[in-house]
Image (cartoon, rainbow, N blue to C red):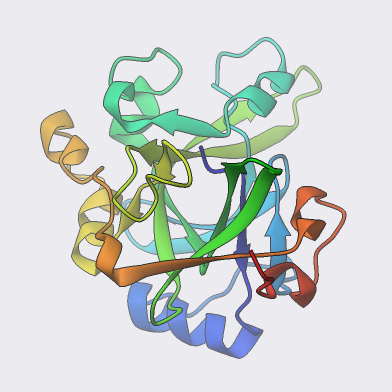
Length: 228
């Protein structure tokens, strides 16, 4: 699964990325600050296509189907499996009509060892921001409040991830990003063809402090390498 990640760009670099990669020149009206330990139920920076343009903004991490009776279901739906995403009632509609990208420049996973679970940080070798494939939903609670939520899609691990965990988030390259967000693309087989493990040779990982075990900890110390 993918249960924690980070986005640590400063605002100017983030603005340039959104403008260069998605031609977004109007940045969301929610305050942005670098995050080192993003956890479920928190807002995550995402990109969607509204049918005319790309848009950037925040979605709550934890998918709430539009028909849900209780928004608490989102706590159980932070990840969606790529293999069955077109079969699950919760995700079928969004898979065709409401796809998003969740921006990140690193994610955490916990490796089982004889001493317990060891947190590790996984990044691209060039430390670039990558796009995690996701789905989003618009839900209105009984009070009439609108909640925009999302889930991160996971797939089988690549060779680098396999010793660490049996799942990894789907990471999309530049051309794949465009296809995933294109609202005219509705063929399930074409879309599922994008949901593959990212090449191991472009990634690396290292052990980090157990500080990341608590979402209360959100500082540069979370990403500092420690001796394994």
